[in-house]
Image: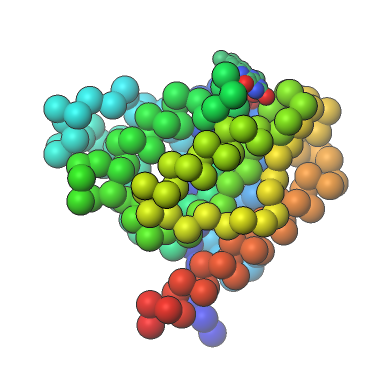
Amino acid sequence: MEKKISILGFAGSLRKGSYNKALLRAAVELVPKEADLETFDLEGIPPFNQDLENNPPERVKEFKKKIKAADAILIATPEANYTIPGVLKNAIDWASRPYGDNAFDGKPVGMMGATIGNLGTARAQYHLRQAFVFLNMHPLNQPEVMVSAAQEKIDQNGRVTDPKTREKIKELLESLVTWTRKFKSVER
Ligand SMILES: Cc1cc2nc3c(=O)[nH]c(=O)nc-3n(C[C@H](O)[C@H](O)[C@H](O)COP(=O)(O)O)c2cc1C
């Protein structure tokens, strides 16, 4: 039997009632049997300070370790002022440094996003794709999971209740696993 694919997921929001954390929780429920999805909360990651990049705070060390150990990454991003939130960018910046020790290097990555707005984080996701170029990540192109009017699809308990959204998340995970296996077969 092939080894399970390990996925590390994180959301670009610290909010308890975050819709993007809700997407990640749904992903944990929907992940295919041949994969494991562990989530990491960005709470506790301080603002980036390059003076500390060679010996970063413990929470950053922990984050980088988990990224490096994972076969693939899953990011749930909100949209803030037409781009990715500072919380997410800040965490990415820490994990990409110091130069030569980019924890994301060569990792396949899938993304999804939820907003109360109409465009389902499309602008944020395309900005995130731009960062993947320099991070040397391998983003999955399809399906795109862009959840608009999230308040109608996620209930008061933070559960994704909309069947179409759940289906899309499931499809995304299945595609991410297939995509990741392609890279692993090249490695062998
Ligand atoms: C500072 C700020 C800027 C925002 N800008 C956008 C935006 O540009 N586009 C959008 O669709 N939603 C925007 N929103 C709404 C967020 O997408 C929405 O609050 C979402 O629920 C945040 O994600 P979370 O629920 O995971 O915390 C903004 C929210 C905040 C707080």
